[in-house]
Image 1 (tube, rainbow, N blue to C red):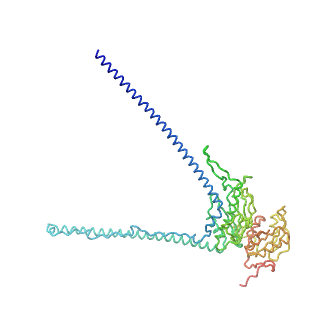
Image 2: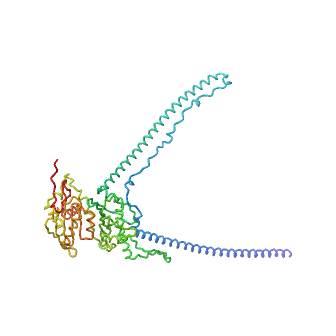
Image 3: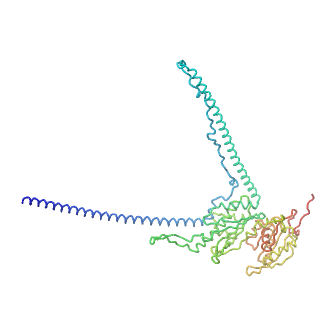
Length: 551
């Protein structure tokens, strides 16, 4: 009985202990659940905070990207607005000396070949002399003699090998020196040739050879730095008789003007929107770009010409694009003018307005360049193409073209009359002029633009004097004509161009005449004054040749 009560007590204690353990485990589990929930909530809060931080950083990065876009846009517009000012900070003159190559001559470095090998020393091959005690040993003297003889032979062999190696070193050193000298000679000869070419180029430019003049100013214009999107393509021609440079320049298209005024980031929807630039503002900016590029090009040409090779520049600015109306490629002229050095350079370009400058120079500027409204070039570039002067009959080896300077007055008169008839004008001859040319009255039958036109052609070798231009203007005024055209076999000076400015006069040089004859009358001609040609004077009658001098 007592044992049963003791056993029951043990069971009760065990049950109570199990209950206590269960409660402990339950409490631990509750604590673990609470800790887990607390940790989960902390994690969720951290994750939400991290997402919020990432979102904030992303928004800031997008805002920064848009700010960079606006900064680049502002820089681009500023560059477009500052086209003229940029070139004023630079020197446009191209120094011929700067075109000469300068190459640093290499230094002769033979390396180890320049270091002689040490000569073998006799002492290194001789055996040590026996000591007194060693000499008393049997055979010591004989052994020493044998060693001495062996050392002598080894020394002689070493000396001979050294001599062979030294001879080879000296041979290689001489070869290296010869190769170095050959390299230096080649460099100096190449530099001498290149420097001679530059000197020849300079000499040709200073005497006004057309190819050299064109090459020089092409290099000047090619060095000019423009923003991206500017074609920087051009054609140049030089008329030495008139010291006139003709420029046909490719302008940037209207789409080079940014269509966006500002970029904005819209957080809702995470997108970048564009605020469009007003069309009128784009058109005005494009017109200013056309004007600035024109003035800049003229400034670069005149500023680079320290030798006074160019007195007059005829500039035609074209744009190579596709017409929205026809879908075809077009090349309209948007700005054109002819100006002399004195007229153009007499102004402060740091404060000048390019468009006002062009209007002051009597330039024709498109009323709306963005819509490709063209203007008529003051001088068609093809009319000064030197190929019309240089072309010859290659197959026969003889130039079969008629020389305008060798035609009789009647032949020359008929040729000019035929030319303007082919050009669509109604031609009537007047009394022959007494200065070697012809006077011709033509009628342009076009409505509004047509009218009476006075034409005079002069066969001259030298530059036509300005007095001839004044006389033509007086004739136009007296005849009540709408226009006067002076054609010559030579050229005109800047005084003539200055006088003709803003007047109903058109001056056509020899190259222009050759072009018109080829295109409109299908006549291949040339202009080569005979050796004894005498320039006509108003009171001496038609041009003539003197008798050749006595031998």
